[in-house]
Length: 392
Image (tube, rainbow, N blue to C red; front, side, top):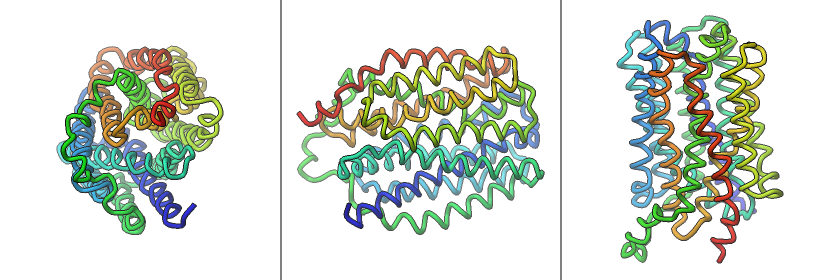
């Protein structure tokens, strides 16, 4: 592997790590932030809606911005906005201001939504150049970032360290890593070439591909399962199973660790068994974990079940994104479109779950998520043979 490609891959590992660190720093402190703000479950759903709106705006803008500016510029901007959002949440916690926290979450969503689409496009290109499965490991570094962030958050929660200073410190760490890593992402990749300027209709037609729509459905289902854990898992364990805040954070760390292991180990399973089989197995494991958390009243068993939930959702997004990129011409447009469908889950998930949780409890509110993940089992065959289709 050329040294420049190796450096590019390592930079992407770092850049995927950073939003995981940022989002886990926030998620592990959600019970503390909820208490500082005096917010109800429904109000927390509305606050989390800022994250969803920001994410949706980011992903809708990302594809056109990558075509115009290239992946490097969009990744740099998205990462900078993400860390600014983490700092803003910290400031909102210090000021006990729900509005500032909501704005901060909007910035985090905007940065992650825009930056991660660009990172997925760049990662799909690295996967193509190396000829090996790279996307699961790239997303593994996102999960590794959540593990590190969750462990730090768990310890700081147990020590009653102020939430605001914790998040401001995380933002400073993210900034330092961003400055080092971004220089190794080549400028200009993803930008539309003049020869493609006359074919916008062809690129726009990717959404008419029924196979791509099915792959997008898989992404939506498993991204919803992952996003639900990112937004609500500590509160589900605290309010639904009686854990204290520190143990709720610890269980989220266990979920993040399970996702990390699944993503780091997943490439070999994809290469051996194929994308369709891996995605079907992922949905089965994810649905089983969710079912135990929802229906089993034993807190220890429910806490252990997040391992199934984490492993099951770990490969859904990266493997389906690879399948989308290989499903036909204009791979960058296909990756962008499929990622957009997946991130819809982050838009509708938090407020809907918050509203349901206010009336039926957070555990029962997970039942629709369980049903959607179960449907993904039957959509998985759409990922079969996508690389062959591309090669043809």
